[in-house]
Length: 45
Image 1 (cartoon, rainbow, N blue to C red):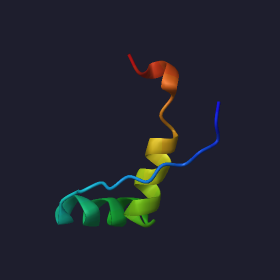
Image 2 (cartoon, rainbow, N blue to C red):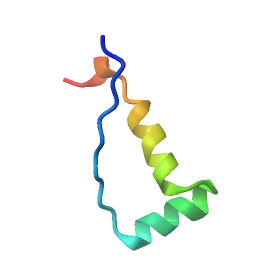
Image 3 (cartoon, one colour):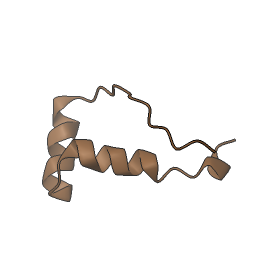
Image 4 (cartoon, rainbow, N blue to C red):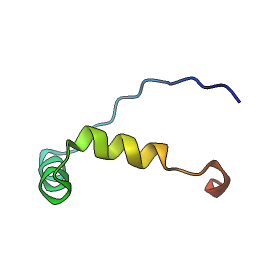
């Protein structure tokens, strides 16, 4: 397996952005990046 990062652009609406910011107390970019990195390839069908 290669250890290579790919760039991706994600668009979310402003309300969702602020909701993530308020609930998690972290930058939404970091929260979303962590969620994507936590995806287990074995779970994808």
